[in-house]
Length: 254
Image (cartoon, rainbow, N blue to C red; front, side, top):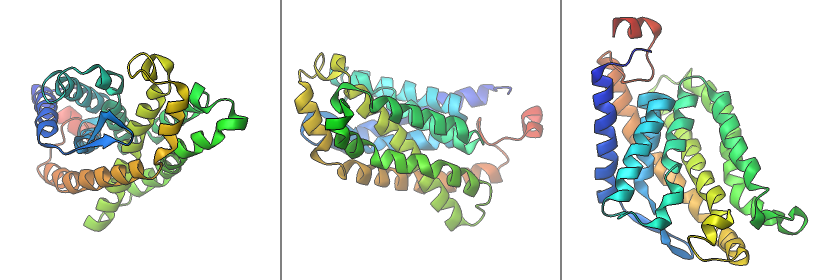
């Protein structure tokens, strides 16, 4: 695909927008761990995946997340460092599904879930399988949604159908974001080295509230759909999509 200067300009603009939204966004402290906050800004990474595709969408989300982490309100806190890959994984997952590469998104989320089940807080499974269930039940639902969402994307035409499809798409992306956060937090170098916690405390935190975080992801997915549906329609009506959703003929003309 040929990348124009305009495309690159939008990557820079959207990365800057991520930072601006991080300043304006509400932050929800993680339950039992106030050092970690969940920003509703995460919804915009899903929009980037739709508009910019998996590669440039992930790059834009990563640059935006790094800037938001380094500058206020992030301030370069060590507590936020392990989670910088969460927004890019959101954008990449959404972009892959939107661009008819859903099997790659399925494999990516499936791998994250699989690896989590073999981390120290979940092992031995005979004793701690309930922790794996508490953390991944909603991610497994998101994983199961990927094939039908990919199917619906090819057929959604009305505004309501498109909104519902984008909502489910963003929900999957936000769950990939959350799965990375849970996975990286399950490694001793993070929970002990950065947060000073022992494995028993981590196990307690993982099962403290298994339903609160999915509720946050639903809100983020709703916000993403609210933004993405009119934006995609407007850009398509204008005959232009930044890096995603273009046909080969459009690429040749661009």
